[in-house]
Image (cartoon, rainbow, N blue to C red; front, side):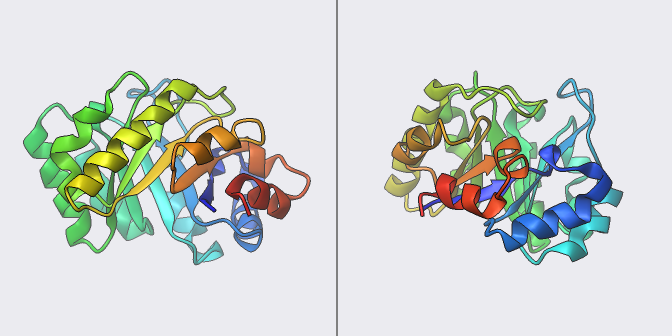
Length: 218
């Protein structure tokens, strides 16, 4: 089985707290929160006040996925707002030393540190940072919008990262984000993923609990 992290990007924003509570009861493993700034990606979603407001609706870990420029300016604030995992994009930080500094800061605040990479970025770009990581989020769509079709070729990165992490003795949660649904689930399972983000497949399902069970391989 793999964990399913419903992305609230596909939830009914008029009832966001209730929606989060609903997928919590349905068996979600984590709540995925997409933060987009309209600069790093061509979309704007939500920010700190929303994360803080919905935190009481679930005891599940919140994975805050920062798709923003200068993520280091906001990581501490998102931890304080309720983020248990804070994941930012490697492509958003040009200085390797700054990447490491930001990952260390996230951990120092008691949260789990994550990095995400776009489809065009090779898995090897993450190798220098493995010792500082608790989670890796491999994008299987171009970040910015929900309900996109999965790019299956990106799944090979999971196996590369797993092999390198195990070779070096690191225990890192390997996740994918984008296009997870009943049609793509078997490819995801075969890639050896620990967790998959799923948006419209879960929030749009008539029975969220059944969909989480199906996607998770239960």
